[in-house]
Length: 430
Ligand code: PMP
Image (cartoon, rainbow, N blue to C red; front, side, top):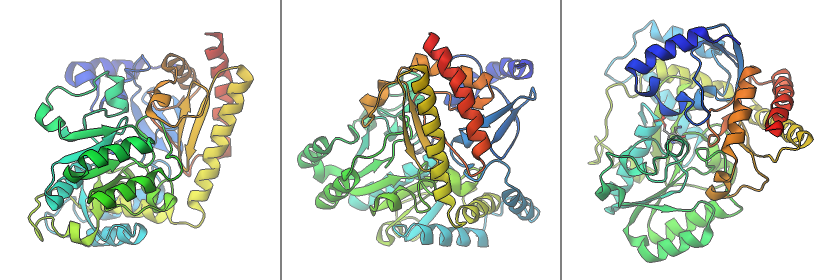
């Protein structure tokens, strides 16, 4: 596989961009080697600047649930941009987007659009703190909620990959306000809330942990957290930046039947354009400026082109049976990979939610952050590169969830499994 052009671009990039990239996990640090540079993308495929084609299981880290460059999304963007790129006054598409989100996710009675998942989560905890008058927040080991100061404590994939348990530049006084819990541990949560529940403003969680590979909640765990939060007056915040509109139309909260007080979104609702959103109970959201005193703002928030791309994507995923088909495809892929690994004699396990999966080089089950960390990342690295050479692009980290789209059909899945048979043989050979 020729990668000369990518190599030359990366050489230029490393002179000018930290690590050669604009977001750390793109740099292939944990799997070794160099990233390829995208020329274009279509459906389930990425094409690099050297003309190589990859079946893409990253999907721009989540937004491309309907496949890359979907004609309906591109048309909506092209139509909208002809009227101007940004207005700085309200536009109708913002209202349509708010109506779409609040009707699909009933716990969100009001929403505020922002420009990234990071903005969404840091705004949500500001609301939690402002509304409760409390300062502490709770997060979970291995959960990533963007790079806001309060969240860079035991923060999952990108940070783990770099071996930064906390980031320099985050004041200790602020990090001290973030308490962390082990995900899926019922008793640890009960104990913490019994001790300091009255000081906690909000508990934020990835209901399915997509930033420590892909860890599913144990039966009753999310309800347990809901009950603890209600008992102690703590706001429950579901970070659905990854899971929202993916694991069910109404996200993880619909799939597991839990009503959070606040939710955060990103990725899919921008259809590939930079977008985030936070929303929740009307009494909380109406405390946000200008209707209330909790300040949060954004020059480009509610950008018309981003709204158009997101609305077109939301339209596509509301087709009857969309998420069922995504779930079937995810199972087909993961079953195929598990069989291929077994045939090659490689210890391997998968976890799945519709459109989202985890790959582990260890035996299952995987229910905790420690279990996920037990995956053999050296083996993953060999597998990753063997797959890449065979035209399959997986997330370049052993600790990131994979994503599928409606463009991943039987042919792409069969090609992926065929590549995996060879890749597992390479892993088995050591
Ligand atoms: N929350 C979760 C659950 C995420 O996965 C991410 C990004 N992968 C974020 C927040 C931050 O979103 P962004 O990168 O758009 O700032």
